[in-house]
Length: 273
Image 1 (spheres, one colour):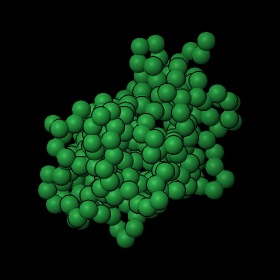
Image 2: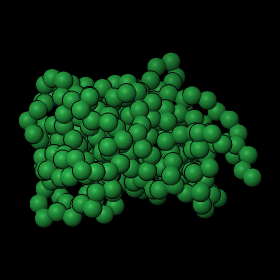
Image 3: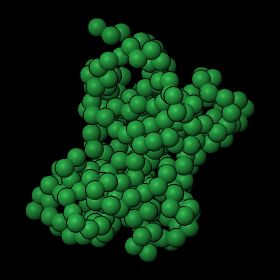
């Protein structure tokens, strides 16, 4: 099997083509490929397939074999891949995801994709959409997890996201797994620890559902900006510092735009035994 290894601000993926839908067990394949000791190693796999409603389709499977409807860093890598492999043409790409069709605008320099801007679509605080077992929006709500109190804000931003505001030194990233598995979230949740550095800058570290701590999370960065804006902490275009680099996020009306890098690390062959 041919593959391409890519990363977006440190969030790494294995991209494989499956236009004929030959890989029936994507869950098992992801677990095998993403193993950092016995496989290639990645936070998840991105599968390229044909689409009947967009230019191309992206299927995302996390490292633990679980399905993800959307991934902000992943879709930037995906857009770069399909453009440079000439599966799509033009600098505006429509990509089918589990969270609907997303629009990617690519910045090309010397025939290569330098950066990608994604219209991440609309955010949603409705507990039914997250899903969360709550009767009203979860905005700065106190919960207890692993014998510690947290004030959380939760939403659906392509996938479920929960944000905890405070200084990073006050939280260990592994605390995210206890919030992820809180009874409030029947399908679990991604967890973002967000520190506000100024009106136009935040710092985010993420515990990803199905992957654990990652160097970056695109949807989590967007959700953190939305939550910070909702609480009045920030305004305008926001620089998001993540462990793997920098993303830029802007809210326009009720939609979120995210811009950031995408890089190809290496290509190779994996022998499926």
